[in-house]
Amino acid sequence: MINARTDCRCCRSKNLNEVFRLGDQPFANAFLRSEQLSELELKAPLIIMECSDCSMAQLSHIVDPTVLYREYSFVTGSSQWMTSHFAELLRTNIRDFVPRGGLVVEIGSNDGSALLSIKREGIRCIGVDPATNLAAIANDRGVTTLCDFFSEKLATAITTGVGQADLIVACNVLGHIDDLDDFCLGVKKLLAANGRLVVEVPYVRWLVSNNECDTIYHEHLSYFSVGAFVHLFHRFGLQIEKVESQAVHGGTIRVTAKHGTENASSVQPWIVEEKLDWTRFRTHCETMRLQLLAWLIREKKEGHVIWGYGAPAKGTVLLNYCGIESDLIPVVVDSTPSKQGKFVPGTHQPILNPEEVLKQMPSACLVLAWNHYQEIERKESAYKQAGGKLRTPFVTLFPTPNNNRTS
Ligand code: TMP
Ligand code: ZN
Image (tube, rainbow, N blue to C red; front, top):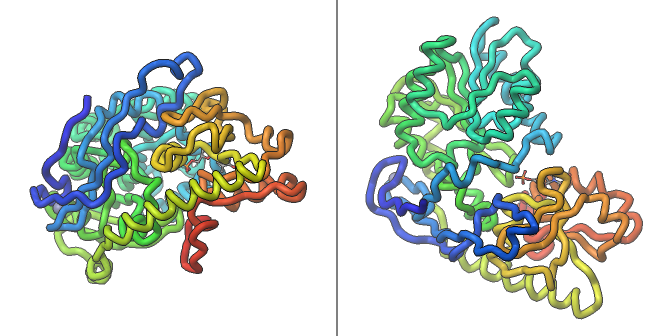
């Protein structure tokens, strides 16, 4: 169920060096039902290895995806902002690359929210998502969704059934896939001659410079650099046309690729900037951990109650990495109905409806879903007016002007 990976999944080099270790961690999205609290929880090592040949960073161990994804609790529709971001991505790329009646395939289509937004526009679309619960929601909403992992085999089936795709979109998906060779072979089959592949992934350069240690978890097998994409795509006859930065998830790159072997000249400047200081990252994350604990202990001594706001996977990682259990943060709230009533993996805080914040008035909430800070701040204006405080784990403690973690 847990396998070690000893070669770079982008360039296949064996020159991998350990750069960061979070220790043995529970699975960040495996929210527990109350009867599971007394059972032994599965944990696996979280260790980042960097490839010295292409600057790809990847986890040393891979947990069987069928364990991680069959019941996935992240639902795109739960964030208006994310839904409109992906809808925007689809609209622009459809305008530029998809003829009327053309085919769009979204890999990792989640609950179908993004595809639903373009369904009315005379475009055929297919979603692919391995989570049975999410694929079912999407199909119920009328978005045809294949409940499977994307692969060369699935790409062949889609091509045979409905033809090639003018646009293939994979947002926040590539980092979850171990066999990127199979993914690229699938793209090569499915993508029409003039089609585009658009991928979005969190960018490793910003992960390192913004100290985003909480975005490291078992589902995120890879932390991509542009250099890594160049190596990967080149092996499969895909060329990079454009790299853009996006403010999603604390800093994301959008890479547009098509068939061919010549990358655009705008790609090289990205690679030049990719010298990653993992030592500074390590020191900074450890300091953050100690300062966060010191703040929580101080607040507790003063009789203040601090709750967690949002139960994203990165919240689980932060709580477990820092060792913050119910004595320091007794409650976490989250707007996702399927998470409410469950408990945070490892640290076991109960997850309540955010309505409880205004009702019970904790002194402050540590916003674990920091990438949604502005949306949360808007929703909790009454709580703030009543004297409640919202804090983020990093910005509060390291208020640097360039820190974009509340975006
Ligand atoms: P994400 O960081 O993976 O996008 O997950 C965000 C989590 O935060 C998700 O579980 C839903 C939760 N959330 C709230 O509880 N309230 C909100 O207003 C928003 C936007 C998200
Ligand atoms: Zn490599």
